[in-house]
Amino acid sequence: MARTRRAFFCGNWKLNGTIAESLALATDVRNGVASLREVDVAVAPSFTALHAVAKRLQQDGVDGPVMVAAQDCFWEEKGAFTGAVAPSQLADVGCKLVILGHSERRQLFGELDAAVNLKSRAALRAGLTPIICVGETLAERDAGETLGRIQAQLDGALADMTDAELERIVIAYEPVWAIGTGRNATPGQAQEVHRFIRTRVAMRAPAVAPKLRILYGGSVKPDNIRALMAEEDVDGGLVGGASLSAESFIRLVKEGSAS
Ligand code: PGA
Image (cartoon, rainbow, N blue to C red; front, side, top):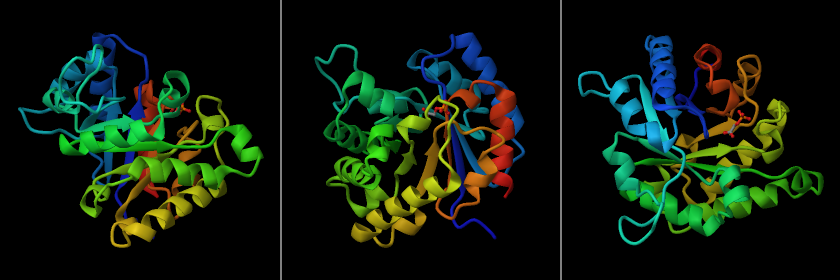
């Protein structure tokens, strides 16, 4: 069955890599996926390597087959905000996307849904595509609160967005208990939440929901991506550990976009 939405895979490199290491990895990924036509691919290096990687991935000033994403941004454009990076600064160095609301940002840096909303809308204003992450903890899943948690995160992150803005976002469902643990959600568990997200978006923007790309994240590997992608509402992956090796990320993208 042909996909209704173009598959999309984004490697989240987290806090890893010198500029030289990031350039080498990005170059290998580009060479490995350049011939693939039916898939979008992005990598998210650390802030310090964004500019170098973005320049390397452009070919003669033209966008190449691999886009560059940042891992966070602030919501203000300029001012007295020590340590913060504005969305327009990310666009300036060649980023096309920015990951927002990752569970590590929420858990380790105290990021709340309201901040994810402000950041997402600022990213959209700067012409970036926000990849907005939502996901429940193991305690919430065990307590039967998964969908309630997802609903609260989604409603908070998407508050006050117009339909035109909703049309430009990507959502990533990342169960916290599956991130970096080697324990991925089953395809059925992922599909249940992905369907819920699409239905929830359809309630306010019925024309947008069928086009919305919803990625799964949490211990995605080359050998489990095919089964996840076979689910109707799984449109790609946000990949941590398996994106740090070009060989495994390329294999994952090929497996995931083959079905
Ligand atoms: P993982 O991370 O693939 O290493 O589980 C995914 C993520 O945090 O985006």
